[in-house]
Length: 69
Image 1 (tube, rainbow, N blue to C red):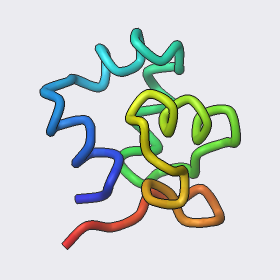
Image 2: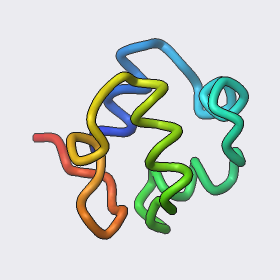
Image 3: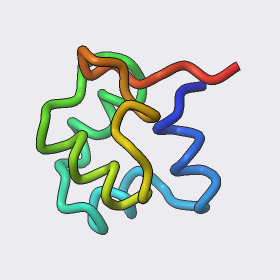
Image 4: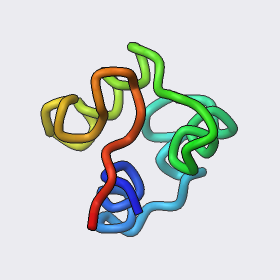
């Protein structure tokens, strides 16, 4: 599991609902959460604002979601 998935599940949100609430593309959001792609700057900013958390707490410097043990 990674921080993005953890934060989303803690709020009982589906990826689809998170996509609607943040205005981010569902497919890109899904691929990022699953580790198939890295987050782009607009996505990092939108998600950190939505979750009210610093970007570096969710993502690595390269846009990869941080792993949670």
